[in-house]
Image (cartoon, rainbow, N blue to C red; front, top):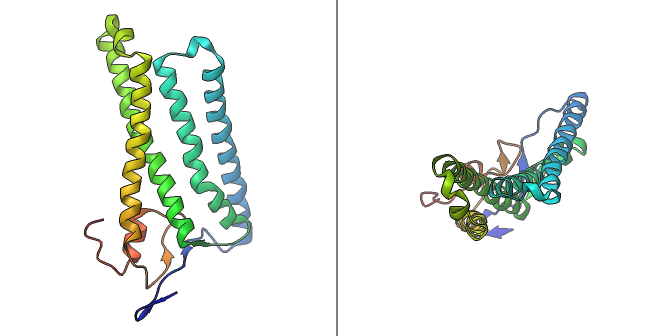
Length: 195
């Protein structure tokens, strides 16, 4: 689409792994197996915690959240990567790239915050064992989990919002197999100081 004296980028070209069909096939099988193992492992953790009343404790509540975050995080990148390997389509639309970036940043940021929350839970369990059940009540655990998800969403909204204001008018080849903030900042023809 034309804007001013330049043409805006409507799609990006992702860096492929190899042009050799045999290597692409081998990598496809490898990534499919790894993806299925990640889905199965985290799905089993999530299901076991939800189905077993003995595991309905704060530690396992946060672990179930982490398993769910792992499932959705890998599902933001691997399907497009597998499409690239199997079909050979190494492009992603501008909107698809921003959507991938939004969800990847949201879930990765939330994972880091959740790990911090889990560290707090373990700190209370080790350093204040007699007060653990009073401190780590279900209301606090729910509040902490909601805070993790909300702060992650706010963080990614800021990053994605700042990227939306940038113009991409030059090269559209991303030197990575996914859309990420640093790789997009390099391609922008707008000032990126605020980002």
